Length: 536
Ligand code: GLN
Image: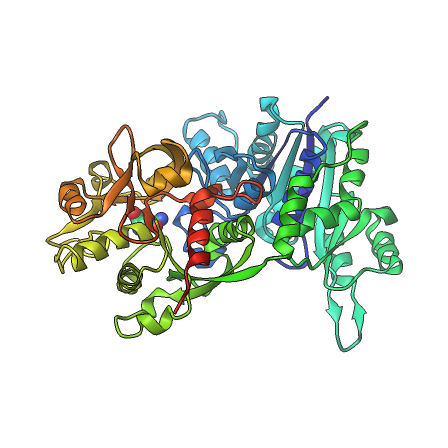
């Protein structure tokens, strides 16, 4: 069987949830026994989102092989339970970088290098790359941005060419649009969808299936109208109604026959019905929590919903694993002071201190950590959150008021968090952090060892600074245990306080590995501890 290629584009507006639709379709196909992966093509010129502020495009998701990627890859991994890689996220920046590098090497033999065919050829090469591995039956490609934007045109042009270059039954195009409801007129409006499909067709791509985001049910009449004006079969207009949870969307798409339409068009015969039983069990529990657990998320990017996407999702998964709903209360770290910390964290059953970069909000994190340490409140710190818990311990337990990370205070007399030697000479910002999955050996008898139930684990990283080994003895003699270390470099990865009911800081990012079907043990145990804690 040839590899099948499905392309998902979006129209009318951004933020319609194209990533969730693509991931839901992938989930349905995977659960029908196909080998599926998803990739995302982003139209921006940054090589990757690693250098972007989370306020630009939300969280930067990190893959096992250390790629800094769009947050949609997190949805792909969570929905599918697969690992993606560097090849699964391509940007305009990467495409141009490759073409310009080849041009400098003289690879174009004196030709004028142009958008068509050189840029589009490189886009097509990357669109087909994962299919060439022989590992997949179906490759779903989500094209970022909105059809009609100038910057997504080369991607749509590459799709247009591929549409004719491959057998008809190997190519399928899904277009996601919005059908807005006008309250005053009490009507659903199809015109934006018509225009968006016209735009796509003007660029030579004919959608096979139109998925309409809507807040109200689409009547048969509306579906017929969209089909008529957009030149698709009536049964190929399907609705994606606002869902109470993103994990409900694969079920909604199945009810709308999305997977059936897709396998029929692609000539995939004799497949079983999707087996979604594990996700079904998760969704049923998600719908019926027996109680609510209030967790504070202390960080500086709290104003944007998507800035802590994987962390929020890991809390959803861990809540379900504990039969409860985790209510995350975002606390802006910049505003936390020694005076107001008790009121800011009032009623919280657990405190999570978030990853981050730069100086802003660090002191607020230190105040929050002191408060939870002294009051026995369950605490989980990730990356910068772990770094700040050792800063807090150095200052308030070991008595070094000047203790700091050199990221915030390069001249500190007690550089407890410092750059690794190999980072000191690095001047380039993009892609140069400690990135991707590394092994970590957990100490016998530690909380971490108990939580993971294994002595060797592997977790993903994204940071430049590290715990300064010079201070290990002083920390351990005062009761902070370094319970996880990289077996090759000896770098400290996990710290904990055995005298505290639940206090753990990790240099890596456990949130990237949590999925509904495999909730992360660290988040699960943190929520378990929080649900047993009686907040004041
Ligand atoms: N800014 C810190 C570092 O680079 C922490 C990074 C993070 O929290 N992801 O080490």
